[in-house]
Amino acid sequence: MFDFTDRTVLVTGASGGIGGAVVRLLVSHGADVIASGTSAESLAPIVAETGARPLPLDLTSEDSVREALQDLPVRGVVNCAGFGGEIANPAETDIAVFDKAIAINTRGALLVTKYTSRTMIAAGRGGAIVNVSSQAALVGLAGHVSYAASKAGLDSITRVSALELGPHGIRVNSVNPTVVMTPMSAFYWGRDEIQGPFLSQMPLGRYATEEEIAAPIVFLLSDAAAMISGVCLPIDGGYSSR
Image 1 (cartoon, rainbow, N blue to C red):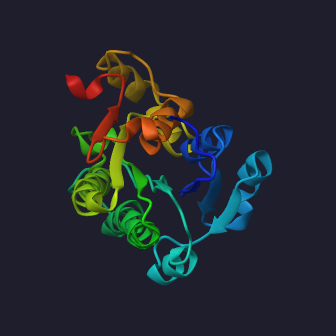
Image 2 (cartoon, helix red, strand yellow; image 1 turned 45 degrees about the vertical axis):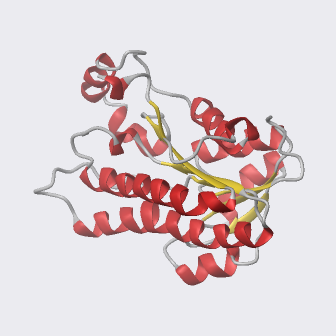
């Protein structure tokens, strides 16, 4: 069920914490992983560690995505690249930051889905796409208006893509993680005045690890999830069950 031998899987955001964990787990299960990021330099550590194939591209440019992906045969995709945005309320939000969050988190994932799904359809063997969303798309989180909007849009892309691509044997799902203490999140979620009240509302009472997000992603890519599509899966320690 978790044998990815002879399967090529594209992982965007592979130089990040969650993306790197996904690459490592996929490689351990035999996948041919294409690790994508903004530059060859940023990808060098994960490529050296795992043997994944590097693929730099600019998610904000359709030309860049098209050139990199239009002829790339893949059976799986993980849209993990992300931009954290800012901490601001709606009255103070920087629209340039909002635009960047949409460009990377929402539009970028759609561009990847657009071109990889074409090659999956042409190959006729089906496939699986997993979008890395956020609990911010499921519940209101103060200060996260731009990030939340971008991830809620991604969840909508997930549902529509599952509907449209299902007849081609392509499954599309999202995972919606709680906070993982990556460098991107630590500047805010690591503060005592933020961390304490937040975790007090979470049934499991702790932040997630990168590996705890990677495992459900790989499950959703695998044949073990062959009948799962169109799902937005919270990985949030029970936070959204409140």
